[in-house]
Image 1 (tube, helix red, strand yellow):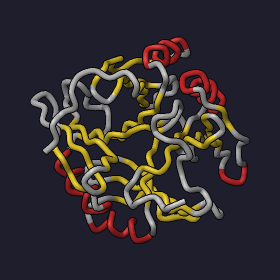
Image 2 (cartoon, one colour):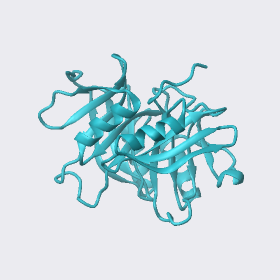
Image 3 (cartoon, one colour):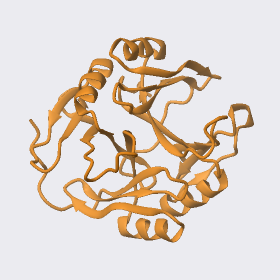
Length: 265
């Protein structure tokens, strides 16, 4: 298998104080099954869709109890070199590159506006094993930030992204891409009208579902909360949720679309 290009989303995981509760929620909403917890690696537990690895859940590290959030990892051929570029471009390395057995090397970082993300240099663990259109799979992610100019300078400088602007008077939205035809991340400006000041900048991770409305109904039944949607758009029908432990996550049915694709410049 060819190595993932630098900057491509390659993996996602989330920490939960109630690991069993998280497994129940995501099994019902996304159809995931879970492997055995790895005590050697802090009870890291991998999630599967149709037997293929799609994400993982893990208990919080000491001092982070009660904090639940999804983390998106971007591919790197050299995590140490990427960490240095992060520092050079005004970001913060929260966790220095650390080898995780034979699986690969990871680090955690923030952009200058406080958006947390991960970096993954693959070893035997090469990341997502499914296509973005398969139910239960990672599909898309967006950088939600109150300081869009900082994000627009930082991420392209570190990962070599090209940047295109979506022509929409209602929102400030850009797309980061690899080459001309490979979009990999969206960037949305957070406004005080839509996001209370106490909500920090973050990355919204989308997972594919066969029926957005059914997934939302299941999430609500299990204690999740709808933040936005369901809404149909040219890319699919989606909804933004907060799971019962407070982690933001989005679901999207890519087969149900509406409207024309937006113009990018």
